[in-house]
Amino acid sequence: MSVIHVKDRDGSEHTLEARPGLKIMEIIRDAGLPIEAACGGSCACATCHVYVAPGWIARLDPQDDMEVDLLDLADAVTETSRLSCQIEFDETLDGLKVELAPE
Ligand code: FES
Image (cartoon, rainbow, N blue to C red; front, side, top):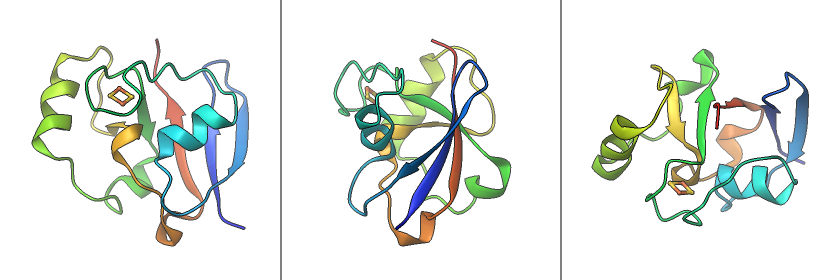
């Protein structure tokens, strides 16, 4: 079983089962954690903003132009910010660590 590790806004850590083909946002949302994902994954809202653990950021596919533009408009952006609906889980991401950004 593959997993991702998600730190909630209250500091609690959750280990979630992750299936290839799902977006990271979908894994977090389907586990019932508080990620708004208002646009449903269309790269149009930035409410699926997460911080990727530093050791993992270089292992992700690069951001496309839409994600870069949307993150430019988001609050509390850091060098490890990503939109979790734009990251598709595969086996190479087993153990990925992310943290929910502030709402
Ligand atoms: S869910 Fe809206 S940008 Fe990711």
